[in-house]
Image 1 (tube, rainbow, N blue to C red):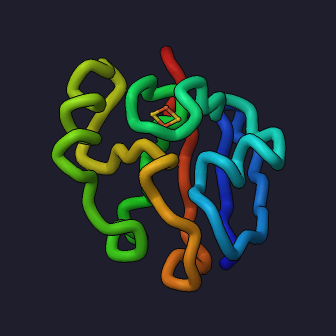
Image 2 (image 1 turned 135 degrees about the vertical axis):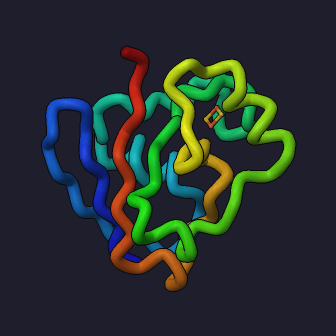
Image 3 (image 1 turned 90 degrees about the vertical axis):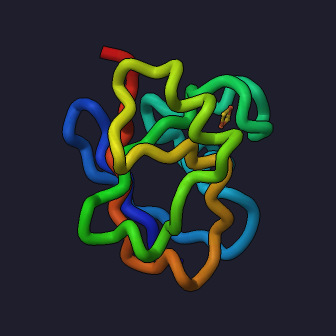
Amino acid sequence: AKITFITIENEEITVEGDSGNVMELAVANNVAGIDGDCGGVCSCATCHVHVDPAHVAKTGEASEIEQDMLELDDNANEYSRLCCQIQVSEQLDGVILRVAGDE
Ligand code: FES
């Protein structure tokens, strides 16, 4: 699947992946602002993204544990996901994810 990240600096990075999770893919491609400090176990929120509103059907909704984690982040909104909790699959093809960062 093709996945496009938009960084805080508005840089657009499109990457291609077919396995693992979206955080791993972002880190492997040096997407600025996605750190993945906890290694993808939903406990650091350094992989926070805002899903493009038109693409929420591709990513689905955050799990309860994920939502609890997001609640601690001032920057969270209804489009927030921790991208280590999104598996890369063809379903994601064309999705646009904005790096949330910490403002
Ligand atoms: Fe830590 Fe996603 S990498 S919550």
